[in-house]
Length: 436
Image (cartoon, rainbow, N blue to C red; front, top):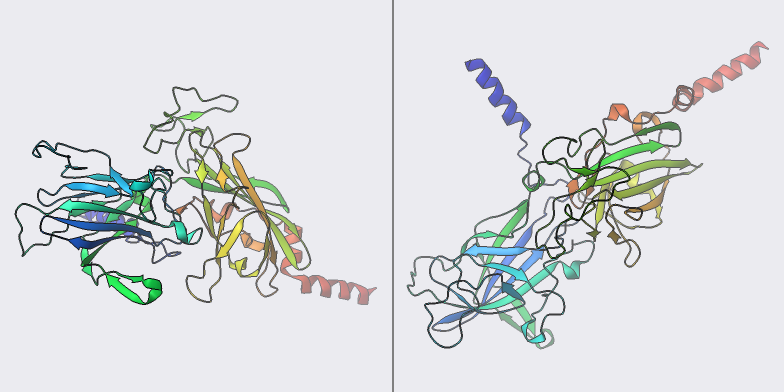
């Protein structure tokens, strides 16, 4: 029994990777919250809160962030600009006059929607909680709001005033404890003068795909012009039909209104997908389309099989050793991810504005596709052993399930031998000529 327990413990410790929350394709990925005390008087203080998305390719999609924390004492929020608390709470202890904006011990703060009243707006606000990735649009990767809060009735000078237990209200994100940093500085008067906050605190939040979802959200299928076999997504990649949570819509059926979430839902709905062997909301297909003398062509198709979600500002990250020789990408934006300096084997693709930046829900228009032309490097290029297929694929920052390399489309035996040993064929022909 003791040996069995040791073996189980060894298996668990080996199988649970310590790298959850760390992405080797974006090792510095994080969302940082900055808490700047910009003004202070006897009874209240003004605080500016900023959210910075320092993730290269992972963005915060609708319904957006819901920042929350816990006050240490009896603080309340008197007023806010650029955001609002979802609940006012019990403010009965304040008699007469205007009541505070929020009296909750654990306030939940959300971004204002576009078109908010001008006197409630603040710089970098009013995007509905959406934060773009750094590569797609760095100018929209920041959110900010300001609030006026009262000081606690009992001030303990030996203890920090900072709230605790911060959370972004987003699946998969975990925030650490606040820590003090040098005060934030701002330029004024065209850069001739610097001002700074009274105090500045930072909170770092990290993402883990494992904590966000116990099941993957996408899978990859493969095909090539030299093989008639289409390698599908692995069976039960994201879910299995018939199991709990494995609801789906059969081909030819239309999802009933009872299955669809309400239009005004503030929570991201659970996927309702087309019935398939893999049950994934997103399928990425890589097709080796054509071979030329100096180039080869690939077609990439992303299909949305989810009936309840449109993917805005989607992106695709792929790893392939030939990406350093990309000649042209036709229908997507493309940016290489040179995370490790000279190793250029990873690229990010995303939609072109007003053309295919929105991946529509499952249906006839629920797909986006592109083709790309890659140069053949004579030192490395080969059709053998699945070399032309990607090593890793991620959609919206979540890694997709890949087929087993043993199942990759392969060259026919004759083509394989010709490609593998052209010198042998040449000498065989030469010998035949000599004999004749």
